[in-house]
Length: 390
Image (cartoon, rainbow, N blue to C red; front, side, top):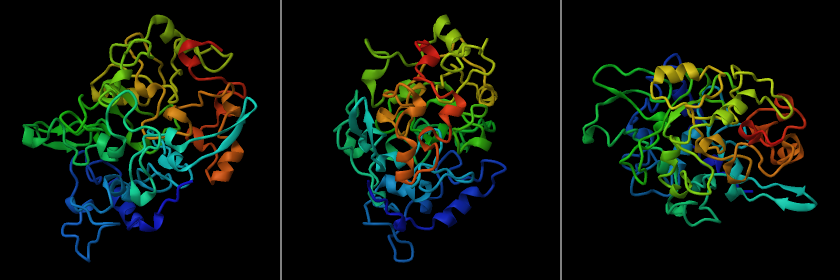
């Protein structure tokens, strides 16, 4: 287990207070969809009265590296008032998952053999030295791509300055609202990218930022099917910037804007409630955040309505990378949303005893969901939500 250096986090309480200002709207949030005030992340002169955390660096970041700077604000226990992605107890239940799982290892007897989990297999191994997050010990580059593991940081995927398509210096209109919550920008302005995701041209990103919306009221939790991220389109194409070999390649699971669901798959998703229960009908209550899909939609107002709907998919909707994977980290190998190695999810691992030993909150592995309660004691892999092979 890696020790997280929480003592190095400056002013978490004060920063959380700043982030909660203006919760009735999104305009006064720290990022506000675009570049924030510079001294939120940078120490302008590395001066004694405004020091950095760790070793001073050439970009004057308030952390040893880019990810440590992000985690100065985004590390902490799950909270209804601030967006945390690294906790000490698995309680950060945001849609991307909790980097907590990169710090943990657990052992279980699986089919008669003792199996010990590898933390490096549980997520995107962002390098955040101030928080004990190091380079991936297994991969030297992105699986299915060439992006160097040693360079992976929060800023590899998120543009901390919030620029869209190169920003105003590249001829774009100024950003006036966040791109995450469905806000409509005034004329002559634009919305930022969803979750400040980089949009070409930005670093290694070769695609526009994906279109998605999450209700502002539930932006910190992915434990509610009735209020969730509504994915529009472009997620898989964006992920393929680093994982190009997995985008609609031969002998790979299909994913992408062109991989719409067949009539059989859509019907199965809508009818499937749980193992042995196909009473979902036409799918008015079929949606589950554990198996999301893209709605092939770019209109933010339409997506915002979908984000508070439990309607299942149609044949115009498609599979994407995040149908099966989390973006940040999960309790399972290959960042999957459920345990792919367990016959019965409720009896899978990490076990309840593992969670206690790690100091994790109950049901941390499924972001607060109790699988036995939600699906049943004998629920099998959620691949069955589309394939019904159980």
